[in-house]
Image: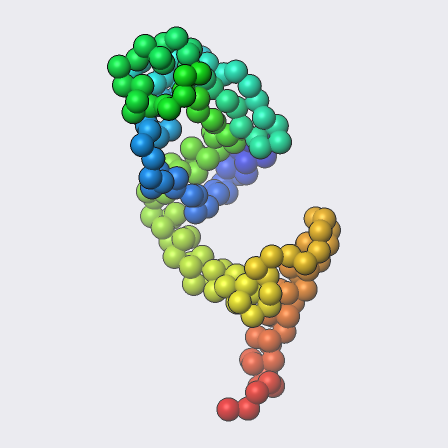
Length: 172
């Protein structure tokens, strides 16, 4: 969070294609139906009841919020909110503030331009690495070995482009 804020203060922006989980089919209210209150660090359900933070999960990097079971069980819209009797729960990422800031960029012209460039410059290289160089999954384990494997693939891609540019390679 502090690192991304420092980058933004220096004039850099994180233009990321963030996943949209709102399209998931569910019979229950989505997270977007709940309002987050940053000042009190709690969520408000569509019926106006609070969901208080009850836990943090450092491994998966989220906070868990839960409503009082008695309140949920007595709620007239419980069937549209939760199947359980322990109270509705929602999760908020440790990085939610940064993600919200990035979502705020999505409507800007600079963001749209960056995504168009990415679709032409970066995504085809990822697709090539995946289809032609076996990078659907890494063969090695550990960050250093994965970095080495991906760098060797990128070097191979660059070498192929250099050979084409200099006239080497397959003859047409």
